[in-house]
Length: 397
Ligand SMILES: Cc1cc2nc3c(=O)[nH]c(=O)nc-3n(C[C@H](O)[C@H](O)[C@H](O)COP(=O)(O)OP(=O)(O)OC[C@H]3O[C@@H](n4cnc5c(N)ncnc54)[C@H](O)[C@@H]3O)c2cc1C
Image 1: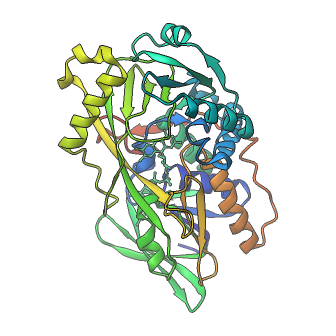
Image 2: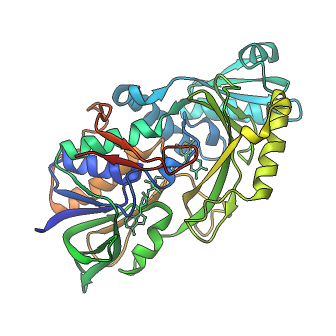
Image 3: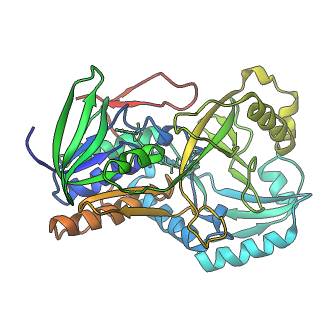
């Protein structure tokens, strides 16, 4: 294999979007993915296209970025989203003062939020618990199994290459100069792919790859488990209007309702088992959130979990884990790591990273991903190895 200029490690939504942005700017790009495209956290999330309202009180800047990306997705990915709207509902025991702060913060972040009284909420969402009222915001739902392959297919159409079932073992450098990435296929065969730039976008798996070149990618691995009821119990994405915490979101997804999440710090990014305790909590909390589920047959419900690649709290930030993305650079020039952010902000994350790659490589083209529409990928072969989300996506050649 000849010298590749950019190697992207990980083909989740972030790595696929980086490959798309880079190849659209004419940067030869190879993506190394140990499993299948979208087989990591990007196939195991809550599927909300966030307006930003969920974090608007705690992180107004991140919320404004979500709103911006939500508008862009209308232009470039309308086929992969459903405009359900979102409700932020004050249940009877929620603090109305949080509602005041929520409305003020939405105004600052540019998120339209309209108050609905309790009868209007009940008319829109007859299954949820009684409320004091709530706000309607422009949240939506993403179909990950449409979005990630569309991004990857677009990257491929611009010349990017995806090596799936190929694991990046370590990054090689001579002094502060990068030389390549050692990769291994499923038979154990190893070889080196030469590179001028490497982006580690391996989500929660990123820290160990950074270590091979002394790059400290600080990630907090928080598992979130979700419960799936195979019936649409809500019409909009319904959030509780309170400080973000566990068990406060119900998402209508393809005829089902996905309720969650938990938040448990785990030591391995591969720890995606839903524990019995989490399952019991999810079932109990769902029945409070949507009382009509109390009479349903629980044995028909499924669950799944994903691990969030969050940026660890910086010293002085009071322990709050940020929702914003962070780009890490170390002593080896041309090696970057990117974690944090969300599915909703993947495009902006990719643009930020590729701006830095382009600067390193002397490429002057600017990002076009906010303007050039994606198209549904037509050559997708589904993998059936997951209970809920279609976890792995292979693009047929
Ligand atoms: C419970 C939960 C709910 C969430 N809900 C939402 C939501 O509703 N809305 C939203 O916007 N965001 C949500 N998120 C966040 C969002 O899912 C993630 O931010 C996003 O999917 C991360 O994508 P990624 O590409 O960075 O990581 P991943 O999708 O994990 O991709 C990393 C890839 O790297 C690959 N990889 C790992 N190691 C190697 C290696 N050595 N060599 C090669 N490849 C490797 C993995 O196989 C994987 O495919 C949620 C997250 C969780 C956990």
